[in-house]
Amino acid sequence: MESSVLKSENFNAWFGSAQVLKDVSIEITRNQVTAVMGPSGCGKTTFIRCINRMHELTHDASVSGKILFDDTDVYKISPILLRRKIGMVFQQPNPFPTMSIYQNIIAGYTLNGISLTKIQKDDVVEQSLVKTSLWDEVKDNLHKKGTFLSGGQQQRLCIARSIAMKPEILLLDEPTSALDPISTSKIEELLYELKKQYTIIIVTHNMQQAGRISDKTAFFYIGELIEYGKTKDIFTNPKHERTQNYITGRFG
Image (cartoon, rainbow, N blue to C red; front, side, top):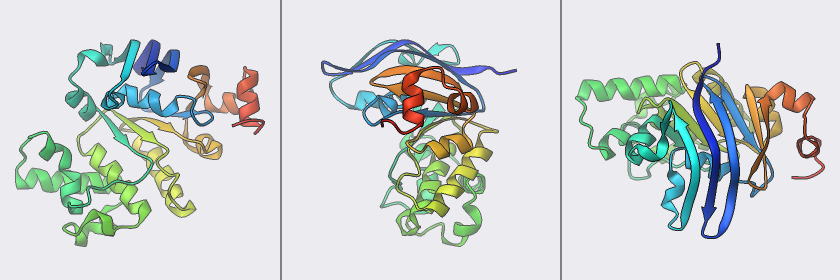
């Protein structure tokens, strides 16, 4: 039976006086991939940044309504704890440039002052790299800089860095838009595997990608959630004209 891990209720967000999300209510199902789609500037990235309170890093950001993570309001959880539970991977691969591959993986522990023994660190690094299919590619170069890897490998390293903290949810903001088709395919295969252990929310402009890897799709338009449901239904039988227009390429 499907169970929800995350729920927003009449959620609104502003940057200064500009409202970027309007009354968004959605339930995200555990251990599924949910794609968030819509034209540029429709609030997709803002929505996922609100989920782990990254949007607060913009000085004039404000919100109203609720986002509940396992029935707890995210605004009543310390942002540091919340971001351990809800990891995020960005559009451009961003390994910490001064750190080795090994240090990148355990960075979350280091930055949060969580001490691990050498054996625990080794285990976290190996497990995270195995899960992201990187271990065999980098195991002999763990103490080289993460930036020497290819773009696709760097993005998988960033995913490994996120899952090293054992989150429940993984947020990805167009994680393949800077990658070539082969690297994109590897990331898609990876996300398909990772949903067995994590709930994944991915912002994507790529409708083929949403169709290939997501279980459900949310379609946003000018800050509003227009339609949300099983990806197959959204693509083959959308209920709203705006969704239909977007999917058939009439705008966006």
